Image (cartoon, rainbow over the protein chains, first blue to last red):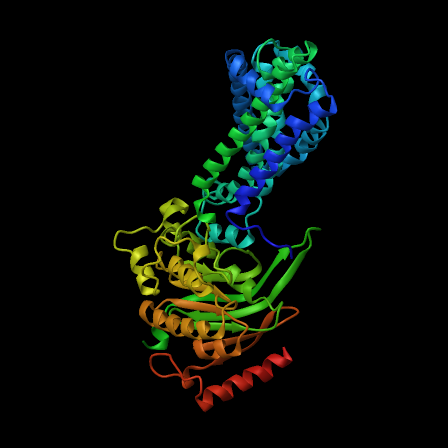
Length: 252
Length: 262
């Protein structure tokens, strides 16, 4: 077995690793002659954050809104549908393959269709983010709801528990760890969905900013927008982890 | 208590129990089962794998329906007895819900089934945990307990509805021998205290002999009753015996010989 990394090194090492790359980026790229309109240095990106903070913030909030709403919508529909599928096998047999097929359509191919249907407002971005979150949660949630043991089902039957009680007090709590593992994933994919939606038809949001900055060779602004996208995904991820720790206290 | 005055807890006549295979043909696991269990008896059930020990318990608990023949529990259907909360089941793996604390696990029967059988003068979760030697563990989660403690919690959960029949499917099968012996003694005490009928499935000849007033030996393929032994002559008035008593040792040897033939 490989050696484990122990405290405080498990914190110091990743920070040192990231710093080493940022420093190399700062000094090696200019030295190699890469112009700053192609790849700006970290210091230049930092300067953009200071200089254009108002512009960045105005474009940050629409993306936050779309990603969070898409995350909530996509996961809520997935949880609901998973319950219906587990409750009724026939509905699952009829519709799960259809969903499986729809999931094979790349989101980039689907996005124009959604924009066509829902127009250029906030709604299509929310829907695209929701579609990305939906599938992993559906699959995980079905697995979670079905992860009850036969003894647990028998226990509830001996206690004359109703189907609804078995759902509330057995299947749903059993499914929660599965749900949270897919929520962690969709916290990042929701941001992807929102940004992709903004690429295709929007004049605000980080995605729109990325497209405009690219075409105008404003690479500092482009990199700042990318950094904000990543920060948003990390923020959502940490939020999910915090809620998970609160809800799944018994696991630790 | 005189024998002829005792109520009949479980009565099986020409009972066949099985399940439907995926192709739809019924597979019989228990064949031609005739058995009468008086109320208050401690009956242990032993037999080779696949003899239908657990199947019989599941039929009594209304988890499996008889294919033919009759099975009555306190004179009625097994399903009526289940709805009255007359029966409780203890599984080999404790089947505690990991997201519930010990106390919440014990009171699960009050939280489902429309709170059936909940009475103000019924036992409290705290009282039962005290009885099972789990004082101070009330707020722990199952993952923080040992195997023996988990099984004690499972028994406390079964007792909270004050069942007249306790069905135990190898409840101590996964425990070490020392813990198992201790829990056997506690179970006997509990049985004397509550006077409930206990059906106890085990793989251990020692356990079957030590606990049971009668031992039912099952044979496999198909599952059927091979022999029912009355062990009461070996036991003192309170239903206990010594594991070293030569008569008990001899009874165990006989059971072992018999099981080799099943």
